[in-house]
Image (cartoon, rainbow, N blue to C red; front, top):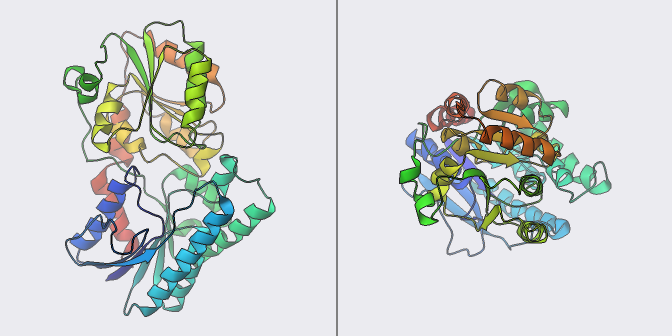
Length: 391
């Protein structure tokens, strides 16, 4: 089978999705499929291939780098890139499947693929333009929203299969009128198939940063952007600033990093340690050092996204607080596992109280790794991706 894969966004070495996409590519090749990857890049002669060995070829498409917050220029850039990709698809002979990252701009490539009788598998890592509404970039049901949504729905309609990364996201897509039978949930996995066990004494991150074992660590690590709602973590740290035992670690970079730094400074929070984004090789050590890992999103954000780090965090077997607010099916799953909590996306008091409660527990029961084994292992989810393209 010949699979055409679109990668319309520029490579970001810090993206937590890199290892996932590399696994997907490698699994297609290892299963005997031919892969043609049409990939956007800034330099047509120098681009990251992720996978080089095996029956895979690359078609580079030059794309300019544009700030994500600039909706108009981003849209023009996305459309021009996708039109160029659509022209390349026209020239590919005997292809069977188009595997693409669904978005309003992918309409042109999807349209060409359907004309050439290709099956279309659309991978939905987030839901545009609803995630732009959640992050405050555009207004819900405004002209810009309706414009982007019209193209997004056309892609949904033309897709033969749509892959979502959470049950709540699937529910949201189906509520838009998408056929439930063609929507499949495949959670983003961690770095392996087994739970991670790293003792404090052997934790590389702890050793590098001289962290004390006597502290109770509340960790947020990842992108610090508009969707992530890291402000909630800072506000809860302010409530708990007199608790000498509890130490907050906020690790990462992003468009809201300066805002978070200013909040910590103005609130005089000595219980918050800010650190830049760390290498992905340290991810398991960072999440393992946590007495609590906090994963917040803006209110309603769970409908449109689920942080890619979720599988890695759960694999470390530490308590996890998902501050998503009402999250439907996701909240129901959370209830099945000890040490995993579903909390408000707006109440710093609730988060602070729950952190204080856990810090005072002598015999804390946590089986978050069980959820990892149930939904987030590489081997099971890679098999699902393989089946999604084998019509």
